[in-house]
Image (cartoon, rainbow over the protein chains, first blue to last red):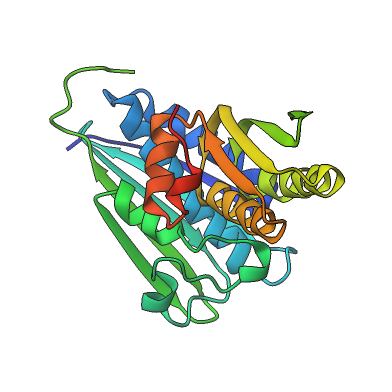
Length: 148
Length: 100
């Protein structure tokens, strides 16, 4: 089994979401991947990182997130987004479409819905006061046309 | 971000990437134009948008709610196929989204 990965440690800042997104998308573009699939992964990743940055920490100081992107056997993408923040109290509620804990910030409450629609598997692992890890996986085999 | 106001119609040309970071800035700018011109119709032109996540959905819904307060109309035009898929996942009132 062959595996390649990159790991990004970042301050939990909204300024870093775009650089993380671009970095991971560039890493994945070495794969034989359809541009639409790459956009799906990029969007789901953006949602996961936005969740971590926006919800995990009350204060920005010393807060960090770790994003790891893995390619397994050139056909499976596994992305983990890990924070060390407050954790999610009610995971099913957080994953409910249109639910947002911050309606005043004009959030659509669509983050997990987009992740679940655009990826094959979304796993949320959260411990209160310890942090949250979101694992996103997508199978990219069986794609043969319209390469990047 | 370019805009055009003509005969009661305010068109905003959104650009580049719509994520939480850019939307925080953009929404204040758009609302400034809306309050200044109080248009009969707001058009959000997405032809220059290369990436959008759920923050963009929040931006569209927020402007729609504001435009409804003015009893005006709004439409979203020129979304790419990838952005259309994201819009379709949300409950945005689809009558305002025009696929041109």
